[in-house]
Amino acid sequence: MNMFYEPDLEENMAVLSQDESHHCVRVLRMKEGEQMLITNGRGMLCEARLVKADPKACLVEITHVLHNYGKRPYKLHIALAPTKSINRFEWFLEKATECGIDVIIPLLCEYSERKIIKPARLEKHIVSAMKQSCRAYMPVLKPLTKFSDLINNTRTGDHFIAHCGKGDKQRLFDVCTPGTDVIIIMGPEGDFSEEEILLACSKGFKAISLGKHRLRTETAAIAACVQLNAINGLL
Image (cartoon, rainbow, N blue to C red; front, side):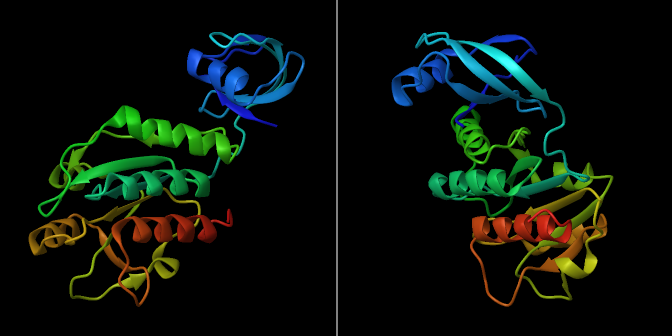
């Protein structure tokens, strides 16, 4: 069944937004009486029936409700510097959402090549990926955050830094505790500066390696996302 997103979803009747209604009627050409799935992006997954096929405001009847659908026993935060090519960052948002992630933090680092993002555009990619993968939790996209602010305000869970600099590093599989909240930070294409790495390590971030080969920023972030979900038995 096709899946739709409605943040103000209730448990009886619902009206889809204009964008979702247009997609339902004009793109998917759904007819009255057809079945669909709807989520509020906060764990509610509903089976529903299209009652009124209006391209500006579809009316749907909720027939079955599941709460906390697909809720995971831990939270995964990934902070990474947006890539110079925004398409590559958008690719990461889509694939991370499909694989399973809770919070995405665009990171502003010393060597960042992109210092401006458009959250509304990026969130559209997240919503699309959430619907495509039939997930009921929409990842939170945080505002662009300075590296030092993130490092100084991380308090709980396991926290790791993936970088290409020198020094001892451990495999994520060896240091991550299943069921524990995790935050992993990834640098820009030019990597973190030595000062940033030292600051992170002084605040308790553990240096990790994601393999023998050098990965692009967005590829490394996806690798970490997949590994964390595999460690927790969810992929």
